[in-house]
Image (cartoon, rainbow, N blue to C red; front, side, top):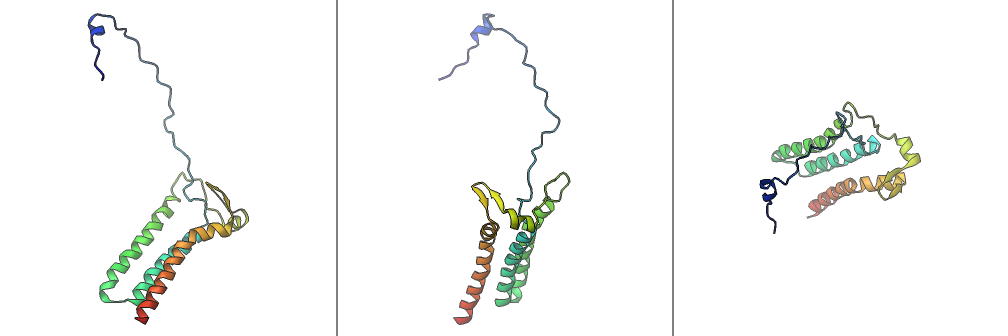
Length: 146
């Protein structure tokens, strides 16, 4: 339990001291960060292409007039999901540049758990988008056979 002790103030035993001087802070303390995750732009382009390819395959296979609006909405979300971060990397004050494909092929990429070879990094990044496109192909094949 806690209780407030005001009796030392009433008896006049409390000491009044000056507040400690605040340290001088810089006007702006901005953390420098890498906004492009050091990966080549081509890998992001392939990822966007796979997601848009999934939407195009599903729309082509199951096309109906009612599917136009949802397909366009999904495509806009994909483009916005990758477009906004792409614009973010080009903002003023961002000194980091995306890694070129040549440098990526030579050096790979450093991750939290260690350096990854270019092939391994590309596989890790592109496995989900490629599996999604293959899933669309499987769904279309199943729908065609049933």
